[in-house]
Length: 221
Image (tube, rainbow, N blue to C red):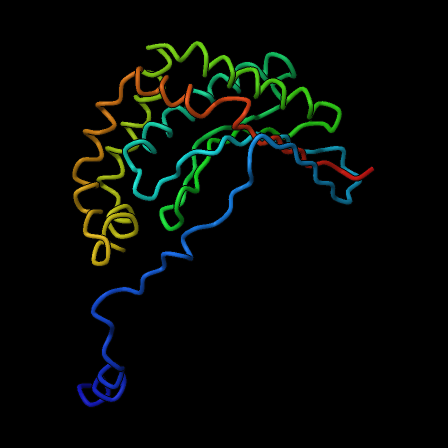
């Protein structure tokens, strides 16, 4: 086996001592806000989707804030589900959350979306905007924060017993990014330290009409 290893892996050229810098490649242009976009597709099924996106500062180099945006996304999602189901019925299943790239600079967003009938899409968008405006101006409640945090903390505790978390999230890039080890060590304590003031500050910062991108996707006819 040793001769085979020498002839294969041993024949590979030496690796660079440092990973290649990708400074320019990490910068991409995100859609400016506010904006309204409509896309159509060919279908005989009367179904579309309404989506609202609020741009955020993303995940890369910004993990502490991003964790709080995850909780803000959960709170917004709870309000969205309650409001849309009350207005349009239980057949609608809206969802919301926060997303961000750890490879690209300043690429992140909070998103709310729901599938619906084409004639309901504008009402869905308006509901999302109104709920976001209210959350930005009036803030969340202590009860909403508690209801968002408890299941999240339960999921975090469960992940500590999951090999895929350690292999894919913590260990997979820790050689090139050693900070991942410290971030993993402090993850649960950081989530437990989240305050209502922090959540409401982020809502006021991001969930504004000036920062909203409204998108509808529906059948062409």
